[in-house]
Length: 163
Image 1 (cartoon, rainbow, N blue to C red):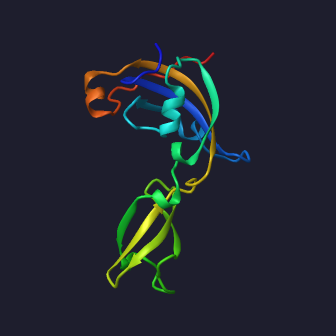
Image 2: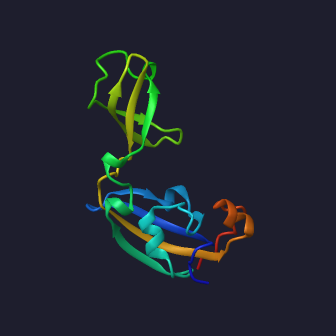
Image 3: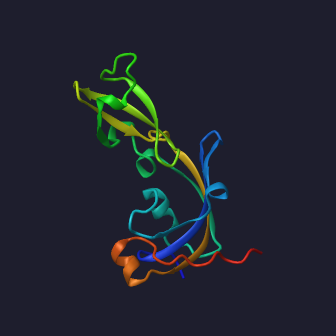
């Protein structure tokens, strides 16, 4: 079966900077399983793997627009002022690093400040960068009706046997 909208895809991957630094790898986090065509992975990755089948591999580069976007396009969040360090000023243009629930770092760029709130862009560390992706398709199957409706994988198939 080939990857098309409403198929469930399981793949392994390495994401690296163009100078070869691996920044994320399924050898650490495990394979990714998602419903193709529902926006569950990077837009450029989804486009590049369409039409591939289990067992196939590909390597390619993704520009920012197909990967983590540009810093100026990052989502904006309003955060209580009390969550920022009390020492030093919090002003427009200031940058802070924050840890997300999963431990991933993200840059906060302050765009507006009041006495009670700070509006900041949530910038992915790879925003604005072209990245290199290597991937191997482990499995492809038809999505169930529930998976098609929700865009989320309901039943994860067992991993393919190792050769």
